[in-house]
Image 1 (tube, one colour):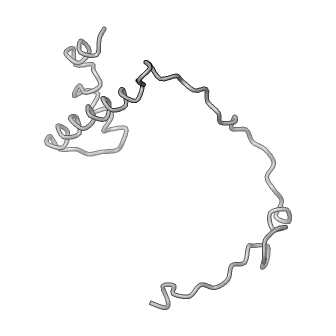
Image 2 (cartoon, helix red, strand yellow):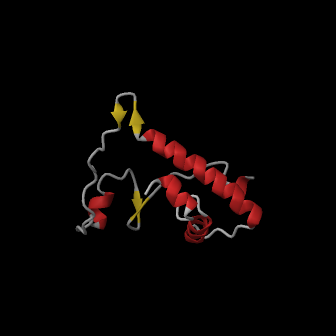
Image 3 (cartoon, helix red, strand yellow):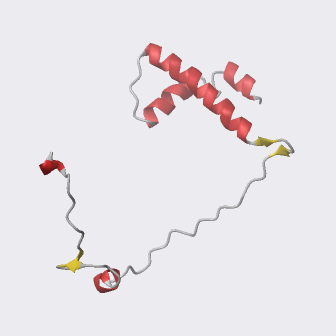
Length: 105
């Protein structure tokens, strides 16, 4: 089924049902006017994103994910973390006092 057919059936990405679901997931409380504006803007965003899938030479090549797996590993000890610190106080990084803070106005 084409995107146009899904839209006519009320099931496309800009259908009122899909807009309500998207707004709900984004914790947006929209009045009727805002829903229509959101719906039009959402359509523009989808059109733009679809255009990114094309290049002058045809469809864009999908790149493999390059992030490592999220695995729990031991973290640095406090001593290891502070080993290269220019200064430490009571087990924390020590930073020089800054002028012009909130107290100075």
